[in-house]
Length: 167
Length: 160
Picture (cartoon, each protein chain N blue to C red):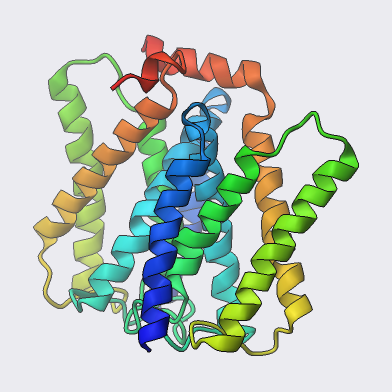
């Protein structure tokens, strides 16, 4: 129990510190968009996967209010995704972008598996390690598509900015 | 079907209907308001249930979640998006304050009616004016965030 609590505290710390250190000031908006898009998609997907017993969280932050693992889905993975997204470059070739994506998803899955195996923070039900790998890959991919859409049209984005400021 | 489920269903229908009131050139503003509101409601929805301030007897995903997913994930954020998209920029302070009051009051009145007549929400240690004040505050914070997000001139906005 103590170890789980310490890990949760560490995730909050690393989440905040990671966001401050690894998101450059000029990319703050991008970082925040990536964070909240990933959070929103994870919230919805986790509702279904916890509901249908794919995974569960025996030790959790709000035991009365929800069965979801809040620190991981509210803060920690969204911060990791936003660091991933902000440092991704469009100029890279297809294979470097693919490799970058692959390495990130692999590391997050590895972390998730370690948490599952050695602590009570997560418990896989029907989910296997490669199921989690595909799940995290799916979350990263969908969030990335949404973020790309949001920042796609630079000119459109700027006219909206102007409009809001003119008013 | 019980009245509660009809209300939940109509929240989704009305929410999707409200999307058509977002002008095409303000979709991104709506998205930012929607997502930022979710960041707030996700956490505060959990806190009020964990502290037994509010209960939601009839809800979606009842076995794993005791908060109101429909209103926190979908309905309030959509209303907040509409709030920001149609905000009376540059009008008199009175109109701007009135805009906050109208939105918060309509939502609070709907909540109180549901509290009295349905099983969707039960105030345990809660009062209607707590709802009203928190709604006003979250609208205000989302508004501040959107103004910052769409501020012209990236560098200028970085200054304290």
